[in-house]
Image 1 (cartoon, protein in one colour):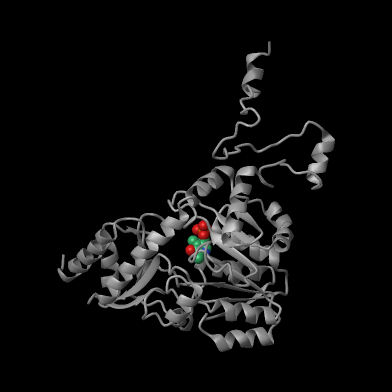
Image 2 (tube, helix red, strand yellow):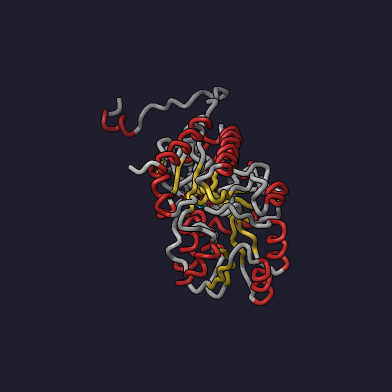
Length: 393
Ligand SMILES: *Cc1c(COP(=O)(O)O)cnc(C)c1O
């Protein structure tokens, strides 16, 4: 009989018998995996035999999520990471070396701008930052400067401008650059038909949907992902299995959430467009969007985020945001609860005045992320918030 201190460290095996399978894959919450022999271990580590050794390198729970995401985005393979920003940072580190040049845009997500302008610059990676609307400038940079990659988003945050993906990717490829797209806003089910080399995503948003877990992913064809894998392995931020399990679970309702929240966002956008307190609405699903035709061509669904300018200016926009009762006043998007960002919270502090003007963000721009609440309740909340603006407190 083994001693009790041995038993607690080697608990009884309760693996289900062969042929008796769990319907949901369990969370493999273990750092280490063993083989019975050194030879089998070495064969696995040399890649001659399938298996797992150490959680940071790979684990079955995270692998299941990676394979799901790759299929939904329409590519071969995926690496899942601890956050969206981490997926972007590791992808850019893995793809570049000193002397390389990146083309990216003023409309890019703020932390990504920081990765390129501060972190990569320290390692000798150069960049050009243009407006996504500067078609002539984009072509000029690609013609005159050898460029390793073009990094872009569509729709952009928070002004919902679209990149003409077909044109941009074609231009990048003609000049020998990779096309890397942050596809977080449009989601895993969109843009896969374009010749984009790598997609990066924040899984913190639509993947889990519930706003209670963080993650990121880079998705692309096998040879590119394989090329990045050694760098990802030593940077050491593989998504942990518990988070991967929660995100895999969230994905089951991804399609119904995205569609339902998009339907509600369309209704809110149309309501705001008619509202006397609103100067202008920015949403790709509106016919008044300057790129409405492009939106119809390249997007199946216009998404769940919209922005608008409050007519009475910056302080009115702040009070409007604070007056809302069903919208949490905070960052992020794609969760089942609705969110609002006041103009004072939208980050443009790293811009020159000219860059700030090109971004299109105004002092009264409010961004909404539409959740799964009843859309009539959301519209009533917006109306009561505008009404309270009219009645001084
Ligand atoms: C949120 C977001 C990210 C970063 O994702 P995290 O998971 O918060 O690190 C990157 N890109 C876009 C477009 C985002 O909205």
